[in-house]
Length: 323
Image (cartoon, rainbow, N blue to C red; front, side):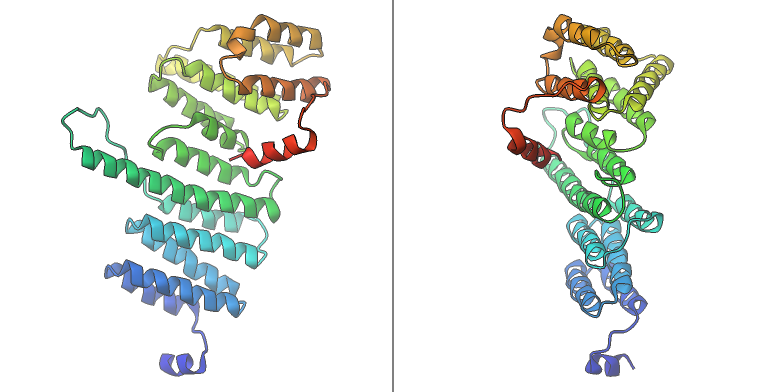
């Protein structure tokens, strides 16, 4: 029957191909299976059998990732999102759960810790390269999913849940932690308490001079988007967690500024806001982006119109620079 269908060019139900290709992967023929996943899914899409194409691609992505084939799995995960766009699938919880299932299939592999000079440098290099591949693959998939969600029903920044998935994967799997990037995605998420736990974990890693910068960056990012509530939740949760874990909260001028700022924004106090910026200028200048965020905060909370020397083009470049 299947041969007759193939001769007539009739596509079988997707489950037949899912079962068949799973066997090919289990036999270790990852490349052969990959080509078949791609070619068969294209046929389903051409026939506008989008649901079956999605079933096949989701299955393929998860199976390849389960076998450690990150490049293959990430490619199929990306094709899954591209098919969502082609089919104009609306953003909903069911599709979000499917995306989360693929996300959870991406490997989590602890990086080598406490390395010695005489360790095998080739092994270390390979481990770091594999980590980079995992992060790039998962990031490409989730960023595409975020764009789809923004276009088909979530808010303008995309699904908060997808932003949190991306932030967590970048934080835990990147060879070098980029807290600015992690922060950008957590702030577009919807779970400041989880973000607080990440920041406390970061503090426990003892990066010299980075603790207060990471906390200030997080608070200012929330505030620059007008979200005073989550900024306060974040700070309160950080203080609670460091107390319970006996981690020292950074006692710096920058943290003092952040605490005063949160109190100031609770009321109409633009002169006090400006005074804080002037008095803590040296601390604020530790990171150039802080002044830009404070300009955004002044606009959001006090209606102060900021001057953009590049005008409309400056806003475009700012949007293009968001990761």
